[in-house]
Structures are given as C-alpha cells and as structure tokens.
Length: 340
Image (tube, rainbow, N blue to C red):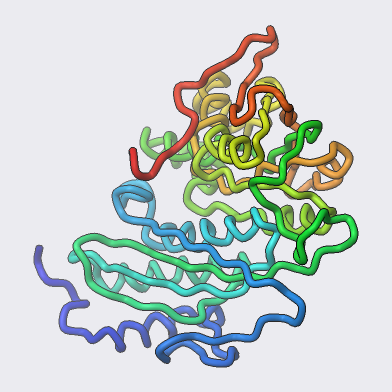
C-alpha cells in the first residue's frame, strides 16, 4: 500500500487535529477535557449513569462505494446514541477510538471527523476524549455515556426510569417508531445505482444519516413504560431478544407494519415488508406497554405505530401473522455480526 499524508505524523498531532475539527462537538468545559489520560465529567445529582459501546468496521458496517467516510462518522455516533435512546436515557458524552487503515488520507480523516461532529450536534452529545491508531483496516469504536432520570411513582421498582429488554409483560401492546426497512431499502437503492433518482433521497438518507430516536425513548421512560429495544439488527431478531429476556411471546401483525412509501415504490411492497421485518440498519425503537401510553408517543415528526402484542403463549418466540391468520416467515430475521 503506498504511503499517505498521515504517515510520519504523531498520534498527538492527529488527536489535536481531530479535536480542532470537532469544534463545538468537543466537550471542552468538562472537569477534564480531551487531551489528558482520561476524561472526567460531573453526573447530575440523583441521576444514574448509563453507558454503551459499539464498533463499526469498514467492509462490515460500511463500504467506500456505498457511503462516504463522513457518513460513516455520522452513523457511528447515531448507533451509540440509539442504544441510549432504547434505555430512555439522556445522551451526554462520547469516547471515540479510531483505527485508521493504511489507505486513509488526511482528507479522509477530516471527513470522518466532520461527519461525527455533525451527528454529535444533531444528537446533542459531545466528544470528551478518545484515541487514534493506524491499523490493518479502518474502524470506529465509540463508548457513549448518558444519564437515567430518577423513577417516578408510575415505575415498578428500581431507582431510575429505564427501559429494558426484560420489561415486556403479557397483555402489553407492541409499537415501533418510524418506518422500519427504509434504511435497508436505501442500501439496495445505492447498490443498484439508483441513489440519484427522483424520490430516492429519503431512503438514501435513512441509510447514510439515520437519526436515533432519543425523544421517543425519553418520553416512553417518563410515561412509565418498562420495555424498549433498538432494532438496528432487524425488527424480528431484536424482538427475539425481548421475548427471551422477558420470557414472553411476541406477535406481529404483518398488515400493521408502517412502510415508507418510497421503499414500496423502489423495491416493491412484498420486499419492503421483508426489509421491515429483517433488513436491519434502522435506528428505530420497538416499545412494549399499554395501548394508550404507546399511542400518546405518536407525533407528526416521528410516528409510533402499533404493530402487535405481547402474549404468554410461545415464550421466547416472535411470530408474524398475515391477514389469513397464517404464520409468515421472511427470508431473514436480522443481522448477526459474528455470523455475517
């Protein structure tokens, strides 16, 4: 591999450049800002600490022919914030680890940093520190930190208002935010060379620049809901985690799935349904709870749609029913990072 303009530069000069490019997305007013051995910040009084970590690698989570490095930086931030949203937490700070492949240039690094900064501003989080190394491939590892609010009287046990996978109960209804399948349809549109066609932009944006549903998760936790999950690995696969953790069955009504009209137009209604069930790539939330509470979460900006129910039967399993009362099995239930 020929050398790039990053070769010969020190780790600390690269970190200084990244912090400068982050601008206001860098947390400079915390107890210990970026540049020391570790970051330090204050946790609000009475709040609980919530943390998550995701790793995105080139060739597995993104490709240069399907998205720019700026988009990869955006998605890396959104993926982590989405996990905090699924807990009902308030996102606060990120620690970012970058492994830069041998072909990465200074322009690439700047683009990656700009994408992260734009996503930080959109999701109201800031970078408190991190690390950068050269590696055999390009990867982004982000640890996201947030706060859980104290639980109100409507919450069953626990000191904090948190949404969990083990909180579903028989009798709950099931809802999903947004339009699952739009991001996976966006990837198919990009791969087919149709990204510039009229009407494709919402799908391409859903894939390259997804938005974590922080407000939905916070509203759900504040309303006393117990259960939610991020469905970025596929709706059915992630609902399976809920079913097993809660020891319940989950039933999805095929006809109730909220499909993006552009997905139907570009890939067809039948395939759009399959992508909604198992395509993955969506940073939407699935939520379980009382019907009236779930309906109250629905807004014009982010729709929340009832798509099924939680039952005592077939614990640990997720079943999709079609209009004829027959079980429907899509080609894929989701994405497994170790088996892909």
